[in-house]
Length: 172
Image (spheres, helix red, strand yellow):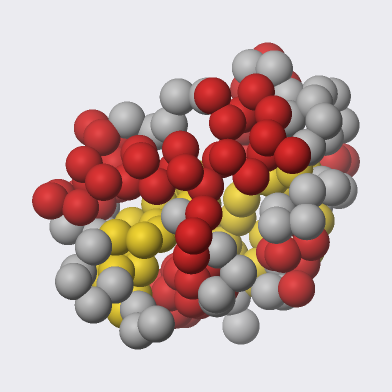
């Protein structure tokens, strides 16, 4: 299947929550995380905000319909990935990898220091996926205030203590 990665447009925002919900269905198979399949996605307004910052990419099919997206936000010298979601039917076809590569290219071309994210340590399509793409898990003791606050907020919203980690990819 031919898929193109491009910057998201405001018109794409309305489709992104449905992709996030679809992608989250994979969590139904994981004990203790099945509740994520019922969680509210990022709002259309938040998507439009990130799209306006030119830090959101979509993977579109030949009819220009979004099949996946990566939403990020710049924080000084870092680009932080808030969400990477690919429609369930398109998972395993390299779209997630291509979306991350687009974010890496952005970080390189804007001479940023790193690409960061928070994710589940032991979910195969989370930390292990990012590790294969060159991201390194940051030790709790080495987290900057922003990443530490994000993890604390995630734990306050119901994630099991110690289940999450912060990761970073250093721009080279």
